[in-house]
Image 1 (tube, helix red, strand yellow):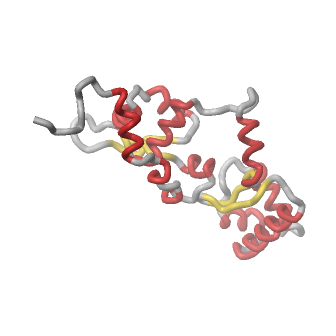
Image 2 (tube, rainbow, N blue to C red):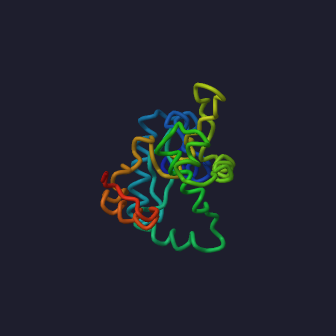
Image 3 (cartoon, rainbow, N blue to C red):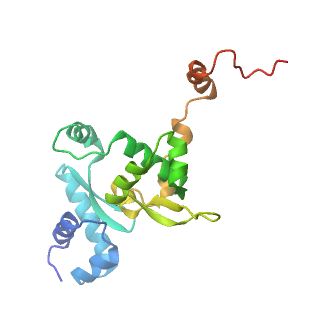
Length: 194
């Protein structure tokens, strides 16, 4: 048993590549799960008191260290530097379609985006953010895609249910109508005039 449980928890979470379940932390540190939770609480308080740039949070299948939310603007600026590895706009769009429509086929993703999404899906699979979750019923039995635990972990979510509602990001019908107007062939109208 460790004499400085919060420090031991911080060290483990710092090197962990994925969220660590409470039960695993308890087993490794030879303490009870209640002691782990208490130690995590002490760690969280200590990080806050020293104005650390990180916080400890429970997400997905366990516990992980994250950047403090108020420091996100600094991370956004860092993400624009050559040092940071980012997803392309196509990959982000594809990831959003998969996240909100899962399980979804490759063809459905391409239909929704209006462009071929094969490359973006392969990129997301390589990065471990999406994976094949099954096969669609019917002819051809197309592969179905969904997000992974790594996706939840990267977004700091416990489940897909915590994604923000899409309705908050969709413009009103009148705005969509005005955006589509220039793309309609001349003489076409929504009016049903005879």
